[in-house]
Length: 503
Ligand SMILES: Nc1ncnc2c1ncn2[C@@H]1O[C@H](COP(=O)(O)OP(=O)(O)OP(=O)(O)O)[C@@H](O)[C@H]1O
Ligand SMILES: [Mg+2]
Image 1 (cartoon, rainbow, N blue to C red):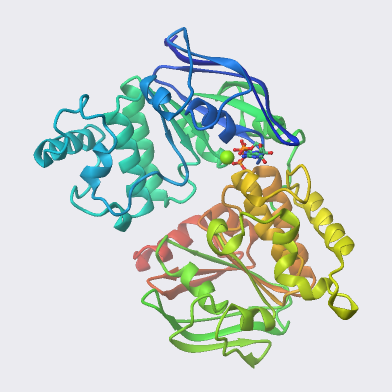
Image 2 (image 1 turned 30 degrees about the vertical axis):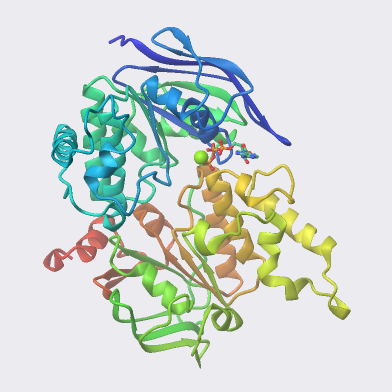
């Protein structure tokens, strides 16, 4: 079925200081298709879409809508051309309700009397209905779950009659059920003739949702086609330029008598952690599975003293930990790699080198308190190579790195330190396939060196592929512990949801 070409980008190039982000990229989006845009971290996906949305100017190239050249000099131009973009950090206004957010920014002339609350509500309601979305119109958007905020963004785009909708990693922070919901909504939009550009690192979800695919590498298009023409292994080879056959490395055998590194007894924290006990041994990788909201992040935050527990006991190598803050936990040998790269994870205004080494300056301090710059640089360069961190130099500001590359810097920051216990919260979110494999290798390496690794992950294949044991958390308690042999998708899900009998 040949659909009309809605949008064409031709020969788009863009250079940042020291980085050729895009080099003559062309992309075509048809009406009623979901067009996946994939590539390694830093390949240029977000930059290409920011140019389309008028958030950044291209150095050269042209954009055509319905076959006619258009000039996109800013977000207003993009909106006029029917282009809407949903960034990973949404543009919703948390302090306004759903209605206000959906109708927000409509020109008064185009949306007569939007100050009329009744009309605004009617417009918001009908838009949400067309999408089959049920949201409380009067609820403050800041109080909604991530998935609901995303729905508000989609409704906004629809009300603006968007013909091309760009979604940058829309499923990264969603639960399985929310992803199903999102895919339904995307299919509704597709049936209405909207062209969708879909950026994702979760390659396994693409066959469910995408019609065609374009692969970027180093700012160039290296291939593409229909999903049938490009199976996953071929896609990966195009993306990273090599085969990745062994995705999950073999785990080292776990010594059942290895010393216990972490022991948690009846841990309580906030309202999310309600009496949780578990242990992790030296050399063990312990996966923590559960639904979003089950209390996994809160558990590792409490162990790392990012939140102060309200009850229970934590022992690190047999010593009771009474941390009053993250510093005490760090001193006790705990490394906490957070999922939140913008908050605690990184200082965006600092360089890669500063971010990697700053928390550990004592490691680089020489006699009389001088900092060993040369050694800092060597250590950072090694990590940059190991994690394939794409940056023109170690002095680049973190702000200028691509989303997934920032996540890698957060990892690097903790790997410079010899910790006894590593807590990873969603370590591979937003990270490309090639680097994922590297991160798994690193985890195995840490375990081999005798550290205990606790990994919270919402990607079940990752938990199953990488854990000696799987701890399933539900409602702030342990719903069950499965050995590597026992852990299957079905059993984990049965424990994670309320269906106890099925487990
Ligand atoms: N404002 C900027 N200043 C300097 N360099 C930048 C800027 N924005 C992006 N870059 C660089 O351009 C390249 C492409 O980045 P982009 O964000 O488009 O990658 P991406 O494909 O979206 O990656 P990811 O999958 O990690 O999100 C990267 O090398 C990035 O560091
Ligand atoms: Mg990006």
